[in-house]
Image 1: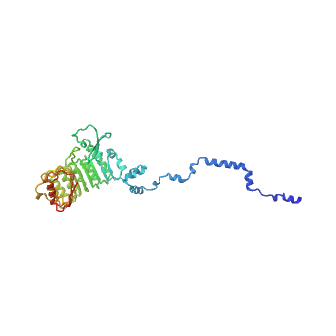
Image 2 (image 1 turned 90 degrees about the horizontal axis):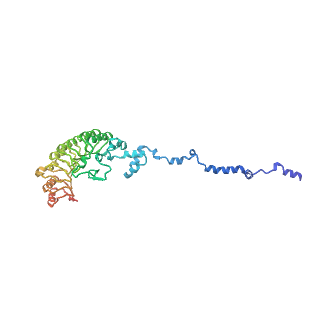
Image 3 (image 1 turned 180 degrees about the horizontal axis):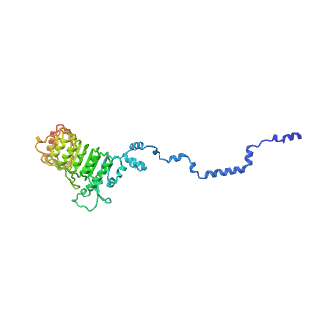
Length: 397
């Protein structure tokens, strides 16, 4: 029995300790581990050990796109979204400026300082009319006209010509035109007032792509400058506007335009003087002329006969004319426009049967007549339209 008990108590027969026994016996270091883990989880994280993913989410991913590709994307967006897009960042502001092609200048200093060309480097259509006006910015009186709108002070009189007395000097306008010509070599359309011959010559020399020109308060001498614009196709001349400003364009100026701008397709004469000779020169020199608009003319009697020299004229518009032609001459000297298709009369005084009869005689090849807001119509005037053999029903408004 003693031998058996010794064998049972021998170290070779002892049962090895289990992991649970070791866990329960050594609880002191485990407690240290358990209390240390939550303390480490509540401690602030090292910024260097943060993940890359949340940092990448704060990066502007458009920086990965080139300017050319981003410009193509911005150009596809609606026009109403362009202003909000320019507020995103400076890069988008600069790129959005490249997409602007047409602009009206309200602050002349913005042009002279050169900021215009930095902000909008690709301009092709520039309107300087409102920028040439000197008007108080803090005035609550607004003068609105179909040509321009301006703020004005309270001390004015009824016989005052508003725009004529509130225009930039000719020297300042010419200086601005020189800056514009140097900064916008791809200019195609220009609207300006109170410019001189030298200013327009600068534009003609530097901007060879100018195709459309609108001149306000121009005269015969100023028109010498546009004769150098060989690629002009659309011209609007505004010489005199009652109550705003006054100037004079005569047969001399019309002849200068005719000889210098032979590629004209559309011509508008507003408040211009002249006579048969000026209209005849335009018809003989501008063989590509298709549309002629005459607004509030001051022409001498007999000018209607000059229209017969416009052999390719397709559209004739008379707007706000107080008279047509008081003494048009005999029918055999009037002639007619063989290619004319449309005649538009709007806000015209048609009280003279002789004038209306001569007008329809010159336009006897017309196919469409539009009469809108005219005065002095009677039954006899519609009878005069019978000479137009190709005429479709007359449109009246």
